Image (cartoon, rainbow, N blue to C red):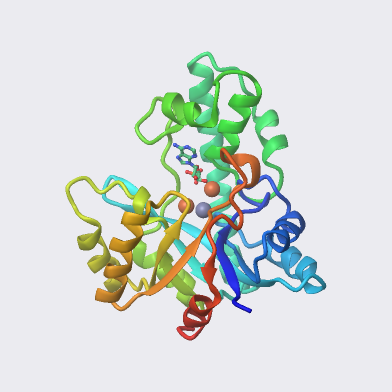
Length: 276
Ligand code: AMP
Ligand code: FE
Ligand code: FE
Ligand code: ZN
């Protein structure tokens, strides 16, 4: 029987709403054979997912999603098959998580200045352990009735260039790719559709990123239209990049639960593994 994978899933250790155990259970229900746990700047969900998956028969690909600075905007770089227990790597992630926390406090200050009354305690109670981010803040604003939807939280306050936006600690693309390769992983450009690139094209950007060490590209993603997938697939061939895909599920953090809504053939996982 044909096997399928979803290589982009968040847990409650970053800004997903499902615990690693719940993610594994859900992926089985959705008929997936393999999933990658790709929390923002955090690997603390991987061990728990591995334990939960042991008896269920779902393969866990250890992953991470890093943010890198590109021009005025940012890109996300996924790392697959990383040695998630590497002490130095975990230490670096802990530093990034600390900076994220300080940034979240700054965002809250700005929100308070805009008469949005939310406290640090409320945010950190909601975000729990792991990495905190804008999606947590958006959820808090929704919960407290300051915005009618998550999307509006970004439109009104949190989105890039909006009044309460604060930049976060960012690596260069080469640093992010290097960090991933340093622990035996394969760096992959995440959801190219969401890159803000001004006048530059995705093709120009890819040329640069390949030099920086990127080895794959997320062709299939919940935000990618079919037309765009075809274009990205052609670019993957041109630059000899591995093709990956995933739902980018954040549990109930997004409009719908996305896990398994993007399913890629398992051969693509094997292809990715061959690059280790
Ligand atoms: P951060 O890493 O803290 O900058 O937050 C990034 C997270 O916010 C990712 O999970 C994105 O999916 C989410 N995000 C960014 N922009 C939006 C948006 N306009 N609507 C909903 N979620 C968003
Ligand atoms: Fe996220
Ligand atoms: Fe992302
Ligand atoms: Zn993601």
